[in-house]
Length: 439
Figure 1 (cartoon, rainbow, N blue to C red):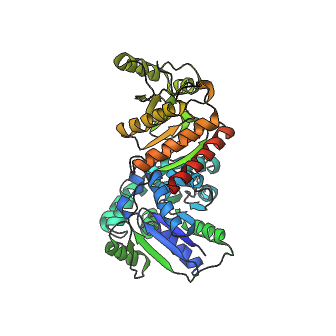
Figure 2 (tube, rainbow, N blue to C red; figure 1 turned 135 degrees about the horizontal axis):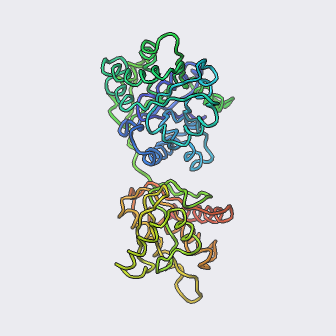
Figure 3 (cartoon, rainbow, N blue to C red; figure 1 turned 180 degrees about the vertical axis):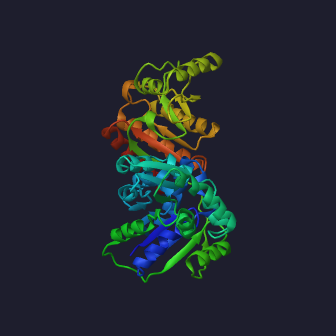
């Protein structure tokens, strides 16, 4: 009998919780407000993604399933990622209600109020691409509005004044339907209706999200309808906020959720990974003419080879225990970390050389202030290291290093270019984790 987990950076997700409680009062719910990190909408997407993983892991450890990501910014940054990392768990995310807005707009102009992080996410772009149907979508990023709801409350004059600066441009653009793209904004519904007038419709996605979470629970056994309130911030202040917004007295518990490094496997193109740094399986002269190196050079552009040549001129050829860091050019990563994995030969310490290259890459990432890094199967392929063996060394060394350096990184991805390579990496990572737990 699991509980439904609901999390947000603050009080915004209470709008979803209220709908869950209204529709299914017999469900047990754990609500977690990550107020120590609020608001998510003003943080980098990668940071929100990493934090969302830590929060989800905490809720899973408290026997929560499904988990509602009751924050549009976190859904935009992390929903797909959470489903990938916790593939055996169920997640429900917030999706701007562009589809119903487009279908009911008479003028063919809809406005979306959301955070900058929501607009930057792939989820939002996908929703607009699939459902706008020729409707003009006017986007309004609402810097500081969620924070004002948290700090001052939805009825405070300063909050309403700030809200007006964001609603007015939508009305000036001719929007006859406004989509609320942040879970904090439903608490502003009366003010939005006053500002927009009776001829403008306002759509809140919270009821639909609540219904989806309840559908996932289905006929599973239910508990006694208890709601547990947790916060990473000040419990007394959170209790006042909950009572003000929901009209109920609560006694929240304060919890600590430390940064954790997630290690996982994906199948795909290394050069398209949304991480701070990607690892290049380079030769010792940093000439990027084949294999992974060539793919990285093509994707990043001429800058990578230019900076690689500069590095060799200054430092000499690359050894297995060192790493060269360059920019990533046109790729979404900030850095390319070049390491010289061994060319597989009988009689040499292939494993030791590969471990040295992996360690060098991880330490170079930390030195560059990167929080996330993606590895290919170094030395497999054209360097001749058997894939299963290379994957085993890579997975084991990454797990060992992360265990020795808690908090140094948020995310390590092992990237297989096809399903076979990804399967080898998954097997290796599973074995490495089992060995780490046993130790």
